[in-house]
Length: 325
Ligand code: ADP
Ligand code: F6P
Image 1 (cartoon, protein in one colour):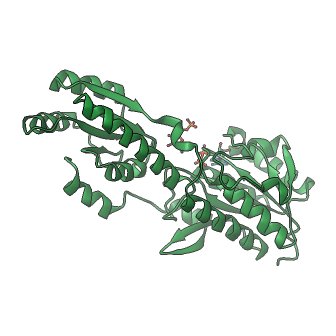
Image 2 (cartoon, rainbow, N blue to C red):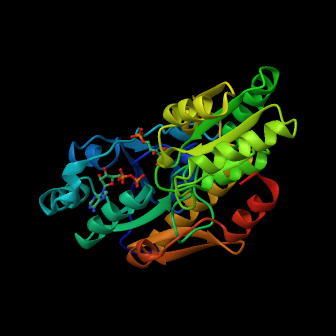
């Protein structure tokens, strides 16, 4: 263990994700078992600047592994983008005896973590976002739960869509990334999957396909639309007018961010929380935990942020065989 690491802080930042609590629990329990005190910083970087800091012990994190949300709350904090507030954040850490911080969040939060590291506070990022849009890792906390939630919702929609012989547009989250749409579209056997990465705005192509399939006897159609692609209600109107097929849009929204984490989310979040504390105790800083090729690994934050990620090419390839588009 590093001589310097006496107390670590943990915060959650950006959009919440099921499994964050499992990660917090792992940070606390690994820290305590390594002889380190753990403090919870509530409401992300905003809570750090407001000194909303609490002591965490083993009891404080009992009974949370199965819960969604984050017991530490989360927030977006624009002030922290400014150097003045990054310095203030580091001073507050020192005032509270915090030598290292685990930041659980997405790419934005990793930028914040890196800024804190520049101010002399050791920081480790843990990827927490339902969007799976962090390039250095094949797993992000919450994605597995979110896609299962969306898949179950689409299964339900298919029942009613089929009964009414309708077209249903289901909007899933992912403003800038189509991973949720791709996975849930495949898993629910959807006829069309629209992602920000691949959809070129050619709604006429969808309309033509629906008309063709109708003629062939297909009664209902499910279109999974990633949030960033465009307004699902508007698309539904255009499709209904052009095809004459009753069309409804359903926006799944924030229910995808809630709920009890799946087994995978609990286990991987636990592993990542533990790994983050181990890295801090080894004296590492400005690193982010990832999962690649079956292993929990870590990367320099700047290198991780510079990586690029697209949709899984093979999964995209199979959609061409399994869906209508
Ligand atoms: P996510 O972490 O899910 O990507 P955001 O992009 O909203 O979510 O970022 C979360 C928070 O991280 C921001 O509200 C801000 O406090 C902090 N942050 C984001 N970008 C920076 C930056 N460039 N410098 C410092 N802090 C940042
Ligand atoms: O980053 C996760 C995410 O759920 C995105 O898919 C979505 O675009 C965004 O957060 C919504 O964030 P907010 O909490 O601001 O509505």
